[in-house]
Amino acid sequence: MKDLSRRTMLKLGTAGFAGSALPVLASANETACKASDGLCNAAVCIRAHQLLSLVCVLGGAQCPLIEAGRARELLRRLGSDPTTAIRLMSPADEVPHYTKLVQTERAAPDTQEVLNRKRDLDVLQRLGLAPGDTRRARYLYELLFRRIETLKGLCAYDTPGWEGCALAKSGAYERVRAKGWNAIVYLRSDQEREQYRRRNVQRIEKTTRLFVRPHHLMCLSCWYAGGKNKAPRPNDTLFEIWQRIRREPDVPITLVEGTCIACDCCDGFHPPNGRCVHPCGLIRDYKKDLDVLQRLGLMPGATMKARELFALLFQRIRSTREICAYGDGIERSEEWRICGGPDGNPGYAATRQTGIFNGVH
Ligand code: SF4
Ligand code: SF4
Image 1 (cartoon, protein in one colour):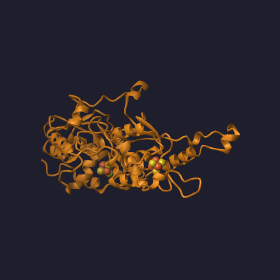
Image 2 (cartoon, helix red, strand yellow):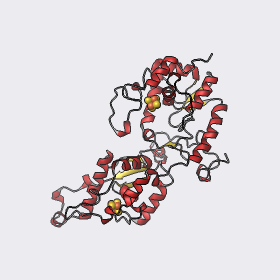
Image 3 (cartoon, rainbow, N blue to C red):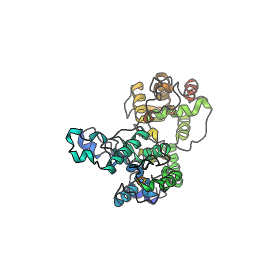
Image 4 (tube, rainbow, N blue to C red):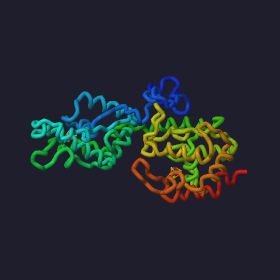
């Protein structure tokens, strides 16, 4: 363990890292909910337009829409924890009915606040979100930088009376955006990932049982593609799991919800709390796990020999369309993107034909 980064070890304490001493999952009562770091418990609440403010501040502009100390604190947090759940606020639908406004408020609105309400809604509209929505920091900034290239027409306009912020043309936002989302949100170093990979590979080789999230059995099958692929994968250790179960088809596999023994080296895995910050890890992979468990008639914690588990999987699930394309192949939102295509991943179909133990006796 001594080769893990000092930063990570400080956060882990003496015992905690993936697969060994992650926090016990909270039960569904209210008290436990408040202690959870899930998406229903935002760690940070900001106005939607302040997502932009943080970028400008990082780019050297003194954004007038956020207090400098608050911006520094938020940037520090995002720069160390990509799993931070951010709730995006907007009071646009709380504007009082016109009969509740006094004459002066109707005649002379707070123009700055009018602009801010529009900025909030512009940001939310581009992200495909609504007021009150909560997403993890990395998810938000990846999407923000993909969808908002410039602040012209968002923080500032040519329309008289709607000039907005002079800093919108300073290039501060664009400069940070050009560096990528990881200029603002923490990304694990390659070195740390490699350290985790080495340790993880040893664990997979020696452990008496493998802890795997159910839909990763399917991902392994997609990748193997009936024997087409047999090389390590950069972002997970499914290849090493495949090697172990080929060598030892009766090795027990225990099914777990959420990140698993395959995840340690992934750039989306955050060791201090074991969360996944890839877009797929936002929420849809959790549904895939539960869908697979339901189809198999198993519950989290179920343990089976690898050979028997894959036999059950291929018997009960014929195509990734049933799980990863939600059965109907309809992609309803960014959060529920389909992996492997609406008609199913051909790699899974191929492995289902050959099995993953072909050649093993
Ligand atoms: S353009 Fe101006 S108002 Fe908009 S985020 Fe940047 S500094 Fe803030
Ligand atoms: S299609 Fe589904 S099972 Fe296959 S790689 Fe994608 S997420 Fe994994």
